[in-house]
Length: 160
Ligand SMILES: [Zn+2]
Image (cartoon, rainbow, N blue to C red):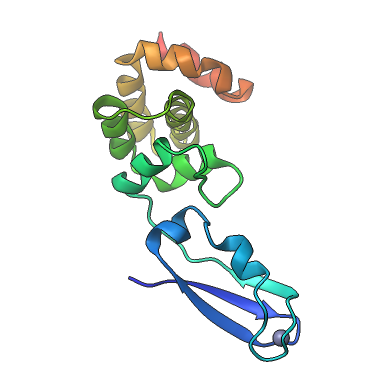
């Protein structure tokens, strides 16, 4: 699997830059590539950039969980986690691995987002996650302050 950025210079020239899976996942080379000199005109004004997409698997989730400097590329990490990561991987990390507390809270928050997002489209999945959240009251309590009101209003009553 190749992880490539496509960077287009304002002169129109497009370059493809290969990065590692980890660099792609945590955007470690983003700034460098954005500011890179164009091989055609020598300028460093980027007009657009296409990012490589990375499947967030368990090893990457653990690296993220233990490194304060690692972020997933998008701004809303909770949304990335809720959309792109299998909830079984999140449960596995919560139950079997040591990660930073605030990242742990973010994972629980992501589970809340998953419940909320799936209530109408995949009720069975939402119920499955609710069952798992009920088994982890301490995690839920720790994450409570992170969770947006519109989500807690709907999901917390379901945990009763
Ligand atoms: Zn150029």
